[in-house]
Length: 272
Image 1 (cartoon, rainbow, N blue to C red):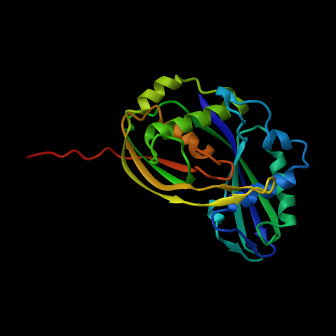
Image 2 (cartoon, rainbow, N blue to C red):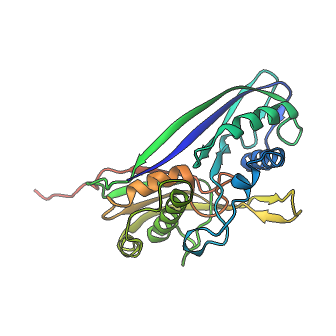
Image 3 (tube, rainbow, N blue to C red):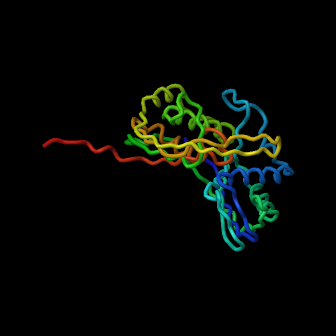
């Protein structure tokens, strides 16, 4: 069993001054992309996918996420290169290239600085979802604001895993070969046995204004790190997939981006 998708990287060269506001690079790119893409025949399939999702979801998740947090609060002068990434969970990726080329010509960021699309790299990624034996400790970095609905404000493992599992399975069901072939309830029960041994997170408040409705929405959440300990072999592959999909709310804009690393076993004390 695998989780497969396409990772796109767009490389540009600024022709004017191109500026990205703090905490909102993904929002700027997603909003501009959506506005320009609205005329494309595939707009509804990518931005307003029809029909309920699995397990009674009211709205289907969009089949892509932006990765542009490294552009936050940065300005690029004429001639400077810059890039951002888009992970696409649908087999169709061509519209992204043509739309971003046009978007760059029209201008990016609050000042509508023009840029030239130099290249668009496309890589097919396949994440194995089989258990990884021997892993008893992991560190999870929450790289962009993350909001998880759970019983506590801290990223307890059972909550983190449940959100990652549901997101990966839903995307696989809607745009891939089908949902995860796992026992959701049993894995959730076992996830509650995994302990959080360290938690250093802080809340970041970011807001966006919808160009469609004019309403202001929060894009905030926590960032930081947490360590977990327990029988992690069956959970780690799904968390690795979630590093590409994001977890929690507002993943399309780039929220909920995580990085997962296995840790060495804790040293055992011995007496002579």
